[in-house]
Length: 298
Image (tube, rainbow, N blue to C red; front, top):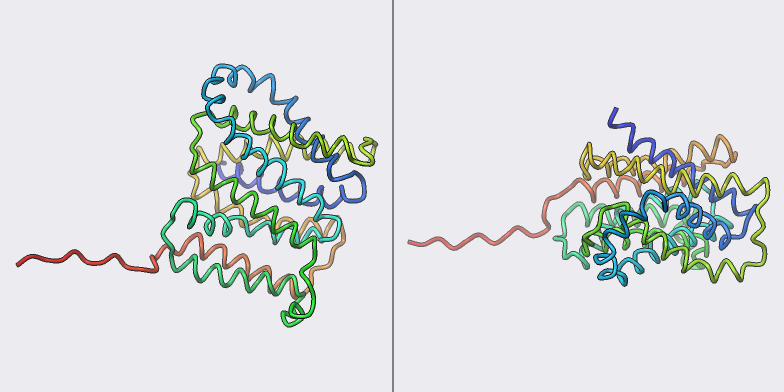
């Protein structure tokens, strides 16, 4: 039963990738980004605001850090994904999004001074090769003569932003309960998204985009994190993190069934290389350098 919590969370996030793709033809990226988090803020307020008020002194002491986390996790990550959806398939978005665990580990080497392991080295190289295979559509030599697509670059930037969000969350360890911390981050996210929303050419809601906003604002922004937190509490962080590796598979299946996207050979090959690289980086913990033996006396 406990396995259902992270599994359902991952399924919701996979469906949200499809929602992001559908939004490309239905609503401006700046509009859905703002509406999504504004809706989440309104729904969370009755539950989180009283606790946030009780912890107002801790919030005041960490305002700058909470602002940065809101920028990385609520603004850059989602906004870049919505813009990327205009030129990148949902299948590709799912695979590029699956690099977040690996990017988290790589950033942790610098920010958290994580000790490098063989898994990080081998997995990083393998995942990079998989990404090259993907973005070149199985012809890596072509990248020497053409630029990387803007959509792929934005999706990789989005993944990097969210990976940095996770690393900084761990490094700073802000002394706030999870929901109060997220509530303040969402509040800052809405403020930061407001200028783009006000300058967007068309922010009208209609029968085509309202369901997309509702799913993104309620299911992807509130229900999925709630299920994920339950999974972490009952299974542990390391076990729960394994379920993130299902995202590209779930996304690909849903994209094929509902968007009628085609799975090409380069998707299978590049996606498998990328995913195996991520798993190796997560699971192969052998240090690159063995600690020096203590000198013996006598």
